[in-house]
Image (cartoon, rainbow, N blue to C red; front, side):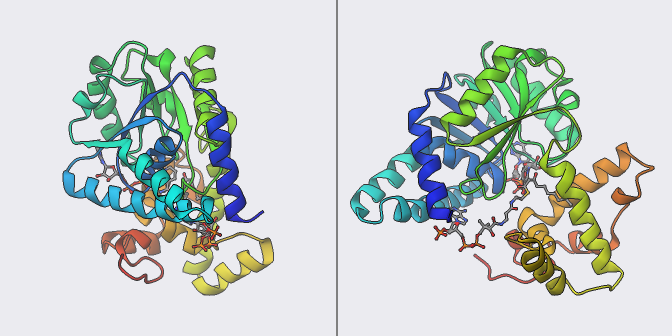
Amino acid sequence: MNQFGVIVRSFSNSAAVNSAIKNVTIIGGGLMGSGIAQVTAQAGQNVTLVDVNSDILAKSQKSINNSLGRIAKKIYKDNPQEGEKFAREASERIKTATDPVAAVKDTDLVIEAIVENLDVKHALFQKLDNAAPAHTIFASNTSSLSINDISSVVKRKDRFGGLHFFNPVPVMRLLEVVRGGETTDSTFDTMMQWGKSIGKTCVACKDTPGFIVNRLLVPYMAEALRLLERGDASARDIDIAMKLGAGYPMGPIELLDYVGLDTTKFILDGWNKNYPDQPLFKPIPILNKLVAEGKLGVKTGEGFYKYDKK
Ligand SMILES: CCCCCCCC(=O)CC(=O)SCCNC(=O)CCNC(=O)[C@H](O)C(C)(C)COP(=O)(O)OP(=O)(O)OC[C@H]1O[C@@H](n2cnc3c(N)ncnc32)[C@H](O)[C@@H]1OP(=O)(O)O
Ligand SMILES: NC(=O)C1=CN([C@@H]2O[C@H](COP(=O)(O)OP(=O)(O)OC[C@H]3O[C@@H](n4cnc5c(N)ncnc54)[C@H](O)[C@@H]3O)[C@@H](O)[C@H]2O)C=CC1
């Protein structure tokens, strides 16, 4: 099925599922937070998108509006006026804010999509726990950290879980719904229902490192970097090989640039610290060098490849 089919189907599904969640606060307006805000607003829910300053939020809004435009063009290809209305209304449902504490005062669900660093996530959730209403569910979009470790600083461990999205969020259909050690059935069911309400196909997973997808994807991508580092094949040939030989839509090196090399490094460093005997997660000099140079992939215009600045 082409992407057109995927998008139409996920959008029409979302209209059919009612969710107890009406107001959603998303913390972090980067690659993932912007996409999560967009798909939530497309499903008719009110969104507050929080980041550290208004310049970043302006960039988030720009990327959301671009993406909404692409989707509207496809869903309403024979009715551009309806398409414009769809994009405008979804965009208007997203408010932005720089104070996370004020932003969670009247929200049903908080989704954290900030930097992949446990201390930074702890500092945020600690602040939010006292400020959010009692019924509010907290979720993290972490790629690699343990949900139990993240939730260890809050009192509402029963109302805490993982909602792990995939990049690009408006296109990728999967949502991993992660149950922490103390997540109640009611919280888990609400998270599952909510995922369906925004048109995603949900899979359930325990709080195991990397959940399902990244447990398999991270070792594969790390091995691709080692292949490159040893000089066994060029980046371009590794990518061509996996696209044409394994049917992947992107090769591993271009996918690393797409995910962000800083996020990749955070993931690998975290797992190396937790699993020091696992050779797969040892530091990868070629990756660390690019990150040190600020070459973080598509988002900065250069990573393993060069990109046109947006
Ligand atoms: C070592 C540690 C590392 C671990 C990292 C962990 C990270 C995580 O925690 C989990 C992750 O997210 S892993 C990443 C998962 N994502 C993927 O694997 C993406 C693979 N790439 C693709 O699917 C396509 O290349 C893709 C869909 C991206 C683009 O498709 P194409 O290559 O065919 O390019 P286009 O022709 O530009 O796009 C295809 C259709 O999609 C639409 N589209 C793309 N981006 C969009 C966006 N942001 N918003 C709205 N629409 C979008 C595009 O319009 C086009 O639509 P059609 O014209 O209908 O085909
Ligand atoms: N990049 C990817 O493909 C995926 C990433 N993730 C996870 O999503 C999370 C975010 O990743 P990306 O969106 O890629 O990162 P990003 O670097 O694009 O965006 C992170 C945003 O969070 C903001 N931020 C940092 N600290 C903050 C705070 N205390 N309060 C408010 N905002 C803050 C930053 O200013 C930035 O705009 C990470 O946990 C990552 O592991 C999950 C799935 C896929």
